[in-house]
Length: 218
Image (cartoon, rainbow, N blue to C red):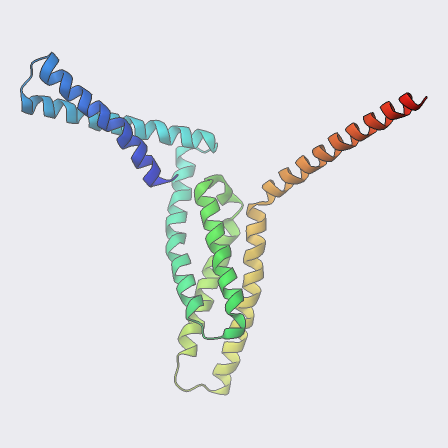
């Protein structure tokens, strides 16, 4: 749910109500200026609150979620937002040019998973491996790599640990890409179904035209 857009909609509904109620109170019902202001502000606040409840209910109904489910998902997304920010900071701090492009793509993939889940919260259930396991591992590995690589003196053991961490991170990149494909798997299945339906329609039209052409030749 886009909070800024929701805020604008609620204000768009509340402000006209506030102005209308003030005008009616002051001119039509001959109330004092201050009392008209208090009444209009109360009406505007009530409109703002009710419109928020209505918009949230419509949002939950659209995405087939209960209030409790949405709250659970929202809490996890809020927590994940901080982890993703830490991950991106760590990945871009790694000084290893050969993996730069891969790390940039990795940040885009994690950002895409988060944005898809935030826009359509029900996708969270398909992204649970990412949020509850893979994201934590990626954050831990990347931050540990940045910390160790910043040490002034590197022993052979430290270099080996850095190489191993980097290889594990590269494997994690692949895992998170699979997480993204899992999140959009229903969309892919739906697209394939639509393609099959379209192909059948095209073949039916072709067969119909060929049959018509054969009859004309006879």
